[in-house]
Image: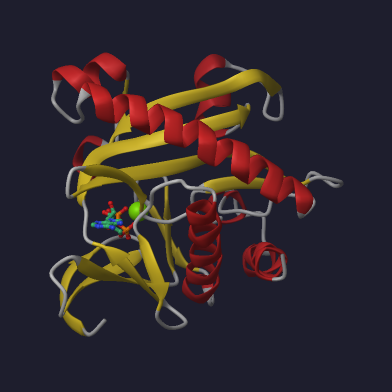
Length: 235
Ligand SMILES: Nc1ncnc2c1ncn2[C@@H]1O[C@H](COP(=O)(O)OP(=O)(O)O)[C@@H](O)[C@H]1O
Ligand SMILES: [Mg+2]
């Protein structure tokens, strides 16, 4: 896969085209943002750790027959992926009350949910990624009926796999964000699965091992990412 020109720079990654029109390269940066881009910073070596974590998880998901965009890890910070037509949708998969769910409904963070909750957001920074429901997704044409069925099915299967995977590493998977896209008529899981978009708590101590350390100025951000990185890579 030969890198060509930069086609997009996002908050956490840069996208490059390649010599193959069906492939892209995702370059993972150290930049960190939170609260709608109002908080900005750097997490040293985050790009390297997130690329490694994400690559490993996508490989495991492929082995578990969850269709996804991953092709190969190309370098420390670069991942080769299939070029998708992204759906403008973020899927939030929640096992335990945290973050915006706690705030919105006045619930205590850490309360286990009796079953997994899926939430949807319309991915548009200028609108601040507003929350939406299944009707919005369908009526506004952000996905088809069949895609919605697949999105929900894949999200729950990813959750089942990841809950067990992180549990085996001594980590509780509280919640996480997924993105999907279309590739030659198929719906594929895309983007990244990293501590940027997952809430991961140490099973024994409850210590946060994810981007909440950056959001909430808890300190030890790099150390937390490194713990997840080492556990995932040594699994
Ligand atoms: N396989 C893919 N094909 C096309 N676009 C993708 C793919 N995987 C992820 N993306 C998109 O690439 C961008 C990744 O960069 P990121 O820094 O996360 O951007 P953003 O700030 O928009 O979230 C996202 O907009 C994401 O939707
Ligand atoms: Mg992103």
